Image 1 (spheres, helix red, strand yellow):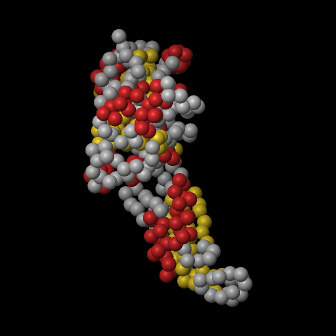
Image 2 (image 1 turned 90 degrees about the vertical axis):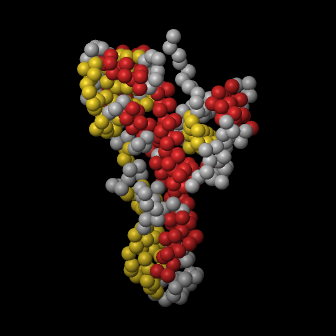
Image 3 (image 1 turned 90 degrees about the horizontal axis):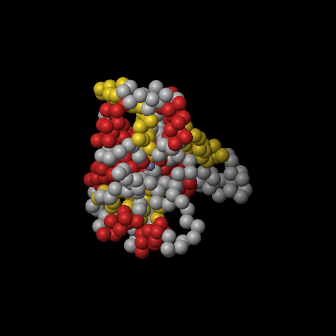
Length: 371
Ligand SMILES: [Zn+2]
């Protein structure tokens, strides 16, 4: 049986939690990472009707884009529908995990799916690129124990770079030390200068794994006082950024593009803020979810049109005054994540020999209807 932890770890290689926006409650929402998966469901939102669907489908692992608990619970009053939903999840032993802005920001994630759906080419990040942080651990090990320590480091998750695991580098040298009276040295004796053939081991470590990696290294290291240090590194890190901007294959009027968006995202209505519906557009910015606040970035990127959700009245005025065209197709277009996540998880399932079925929620969780 496969545990939630294994599936989540594979996903987090694709979209690490560290690349989520600050304060975004991504990760395990409810349940346990050590739970075993019999059936997995991918959903945009975790709503009472989605939980009912999961129970009916005998799902025990829900993978959601939007965190289930946007508003923290202060009173677990079961007459509140949201709390009732949490109770149902617990009662049925369903584990819930959310990948929110880390999925938005991941290369090949939400915003790339939206850009691809719109047929954009030559895409780049809309917001400035950020760099995922990475540390390098250097440790000096007697040569006889180097293989053991290297193995412990790899098992604890150090040295994972792209498609490679267990990456490390060694340089051979001589370590020198003078043990004092109280020391219990592996090599040499108290009060006598000693030296040993050592390897300097270097491995890259993601910051969230530093604690467990150092613990594993210390457990495997034979010295009384292992010498090691940690340094932040730049250059190797994955770069990521929110939103995308790219080119349409064929220029369109704002109106035609808006109609195309309706078709693409299968929605019955959308809102357009535009000084001129007949303006020809070719450069398009897109940011899934609530991205109205980032319209200046769309202007700066010379986008003719910016597609994002949840635009409010006064921001709409500001956008119009700035001469930008914005199309608000709603937040629910992010449901594009369902088939795409299913495809990714199915790929990882066959690579890892996971046995559980993966389904997508069939429900439309858009709270808005057009009449
Ligand atoms: Zn969203």
